[in-house]
Length: 463
Image (cartoon, rainbow, N blue to C red; front, side):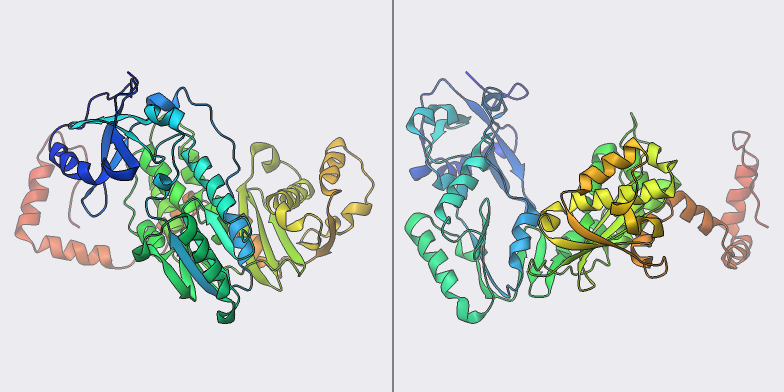
């Protein structure tokens, strides 16, 4: 019998009744049937935000003997890049999407799971299978193949239909006809013909792409991390929107450094970084969608702390990029650091720059003639080789004109910010507090008692 190594028994305790109540809904009908399979995986109940329980099957045992599929999953950038000139959006959400994919008869017995009411197996593909996401993405790509990337984007069960104008809504009609013929949607979670829509954690509109306000609210309300796990979760959420943040690597650097240790060590500097990163996430810009009929501009800068870059078109930012300097480049010459900034920016945005003419702006004057310079070192030869496949021209811009990107690479660390705050001019708040405590009987009694306690090694007074 195959199951989880950690928990091979059905749900226990108060969740039992919940499981029994949900069984008729989830374990009957055309997606499930009773089973006599030698396979058996345990059921887990995950509590949702609304207090209800999500029915899940723990397939870790089955995953251990499954050969992983390698079907390519599209990246977020690939999808959003197709939305230039789109202004009308519709989003379709499939009803129990995975279950609409039928399991091959020879594999049905492997999906078996057990509840307090019996042994069952899936007829429709369950959540939790190793290859379920890849299988579902492949099925959706096949279904929408004639329209894919023309006016339909598919990311698992999130389907977006986009049009440049209202007169192009025949695209929506074609997409709906496909679904009517082959799948079913959940109407309450669908949106039709709107000018702004939430898609994959972003707000999409004709103006461009912006971060989801609900996600930013979650960041703003995030409590101080009390463990590496909590810190990693916070950095994971903020990192999802790092392309919106000028100097993300410099701001978050002290926090990411904490992940390299063997234990969790919080400090005033870490707290200052935590607050600084929160503040940076609350004022994110709306980024323009790329127009592949126009030239791209890459503006770069480097300091001893980090590199920074902006991808733009007609002075409108498309994305920000920053990266902390490694030890080797922190002691390198300014020339080497500036070349490194160019290389990293071009590598980051190669999908936009390959096969197209683009401009690079730098405030390091000697780099203007980079392609015509005599190669003097092996490192210089290596760097230039990486740029030979691109068609670009380097322009010099003064440091003052390059102030935005310069800021990306020169954001001071949280420790510096903390010391600057400590050395600032003091207000009269301490004087007011002392006056208050001197006139407060309970406070004077408490201070007197602490002063008489031998274990108290701190000198206390109200003066």
